[in-house]
Length: 42
Image (cartoon, rainbow, N blue to C red):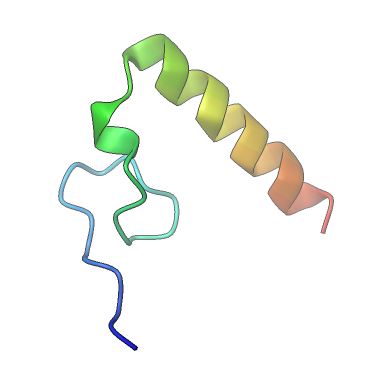
């Protein structure tokens, strides 16, 4: 299985590309907040 490509835009919290480079700033902030909330709940 191949590894996800590395993120060059700096938006990915995992260091691997998860497509967040295509989000607007508002969408990015929303996704980031959701990610952090889910991460703290695990």
